[in-house]
Length: 413
Image 1 (cartoon, rainbow, N blue to C red):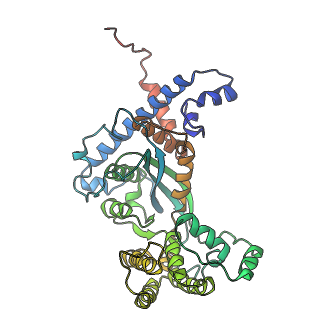
Image 2: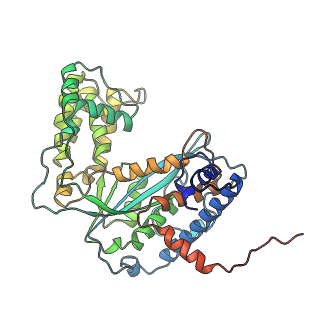
Image 3: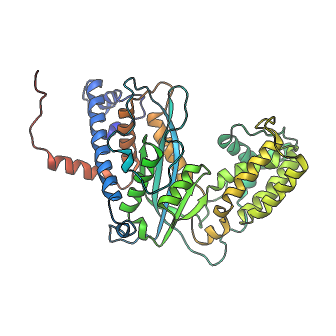
């Protein structure tokens, strides 16, 4: 039945088409929908019991490992996806637990649910990985890789991350030609490689997601790992999560998001030629862990342009400089990329971002609408499907062992 969690079709029901094609079985769509939702809800209920049991543990047990194996490098990444909710009954994402019991000792987010218009909502996704890497006494890659100073690649990359960034018209056609002829970089040997990836996903409020992510990390033995890293973009909820549950993990700002801010600031109020030269210089400094130098340069640039005002557009040079300056000042302690490379830690949150895309393939689409209960069920099944430790195998064994062989019928009247 888990095949339904991996299907790319818009609705539960089209899983019946897959069964007809793969197994020669004709099953009504409504039956597929009901079974998939029921199994997903059973998994959600199991997860909630595990989270509540974890939250009830004494502190000393929370910082110990429930498994015998010692993890060398543990990495946690988190991000958010999008899906459409159409719940006419007004159900809440997770009515299973009293919110007052959740994360009561930690900081509370100001927004429990993101402001929205229409049907689009956010789902929260986390990836927990054991990885392999080498620790070095010297920086294994002191020179920034070529693809981070390739204008064609960077333009495409920045537009994907920051769609509103203003890029001046290019005045160096030779750069495009050189980039097109350049060979792609060979996979660097210093980059940490994942061993086993585990995924969690939910429509629950931020406080609940934090507890779900923390419990999953604890169950994997991350509390006693030799090396630990928490990698995310600059969203505030990521770093309140780090502060509350992963404060002993090395905090790392995703390098690609930092790059997009650096690029936008370098281009602000400049021609492409001048802006590109500025960007190359700044991104070299950031790669080397010298973000303070870039902050100083931005402060000088801000003095040249003047302070941003409420009348400035968000794409105006003064606004872009002010935004980037604030971003770097807030996250400079999470941008020691040279030290992270020496410690064999990852620099980007690419694994969770690719996982978000895989979840979105199942749940996101202009033609896909979910109830809150259905969304939570399918997100749980999808995360189980994408987890390499295969949690559903144990679930099916437990479910079969607990089956009584009796079918419960609703009483008439």
